[in-house]
Image (cartoon, rainbow, N blue to C red; front, side):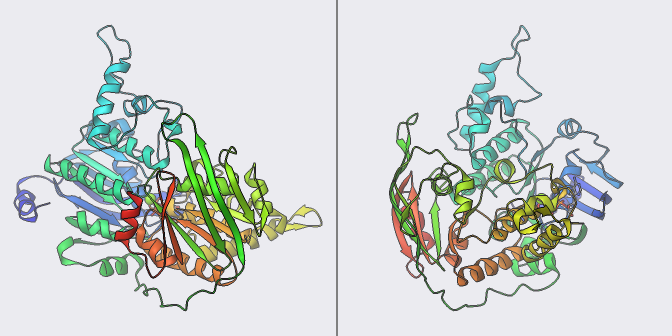
Length: 513
Ligand SMILES: Nc1ncnc2c1ncn2[C@@H]1O[C@H](COP(=O)(O)OP(=O)(O)OP(=O)(O)O)[C@@H](O)[C@H]1O
Ligand SMILES: [Mg+2]
């Protein structure tokens, strides 16, 4: 990341990537319009833009997933036309997709070498060689995932690391990372940053998409901003500021969060006493051990912890979406409950936004309206019949409230950008008007402007009496939203802080035990 170096290289070598006038249209949307971009060899080039700005479309064109409707692409000075991802791999481009593209039924090693399986002298698939190399790759990422584990059994964060290992195994000269840290916790992101430094030292060029300004400003040599599918600006990191970048992204200034009056705590909604969740296959023996907590109306309880600390398990247990062999007490307004299915939790006005929207959240065959209204269709029933206009009105309100960008209410959900899909899921659960809202890393992949709006929305709902339990991989988010923060480490509750006591340092100390 040495700027002087780049100045020298700039004239000596052709651009690693050179896009000219790239255009890509989808039904009802122009995802990219006349987009030009130069990436210098060996630089880390960050790409910023709001949800739906066209970032993922750009990297999908670069990696052969989509073919552009117009414009040209050069890699290392050579004109290319990728018709499939294999073409891009051959040209030395590897991509870590935003929506993970792993085969869940296969092992980690099989995924890493999918389509490029190692063979023995006899031509048989060489599982041992693949497992060994895979173990090495994972080791270089400082992560402890066994190569023979079924990929579908891994949490999103671990799956993301497998994607990264896969990209590394291609020894690509250009690595494209589409929000690689969106499912990683802070310590895992730090680990990834060390890997990135190694790649850069090796001369690899990196295109890096992220909504996290801190990360962008730590890593990038140059930053390109997209807005509505168009190139807005490319600048040296040293010559700009996060405020300037977000200003270009949204085309207006985002107000800082107004210093708001403290929320008033209402009656107790939920109490958890000595919750334990066994984990027989694991040497530790439990996923959660002796967790006690409470939640009042009007309150946001933050749950901090590293990946694997048990945050998701805790929320899933409360929601009836996890294993049911837990012990202890869960009390709703003083009454003991044991939900065996999320439906039962919904009936008691609990809602949950899951961290893994692909597996647990989206209905890929339904349109935007269907995905948003699926849990509150009874609201759109008139005389026992489903009213299309009733449903549309319901959805339109939600889409407006959460700021979803979609060509129409009846567009396919899979055509929406990652961040906009996430907003649809949040909107779906808010429509159920829950008393208790469980948010598992809800703003993953949501742009800075939309995040600020979502925070305001959550704050308002709490002021109207909702109670929220929130986990986040971004500590600043917890610190600014939560009234209290509990910290989990390896399934145990290790600390609790009030809003005024909590600091990043104290939370990290408690999270790392
Ligand atoms: N396969 C598709 N079919 C239809 N529309 C699509 C498709 N892929 C992308 N789009 C549209 O193109 C636009 C740009 O989407 P893209 O995924 O590139 O945004 P993004 O900048 O990556 O956003 P995010 O930050 O939310 O990931 C959006 O309006 C999106 O709805
Ligand atoms: Mg995207």
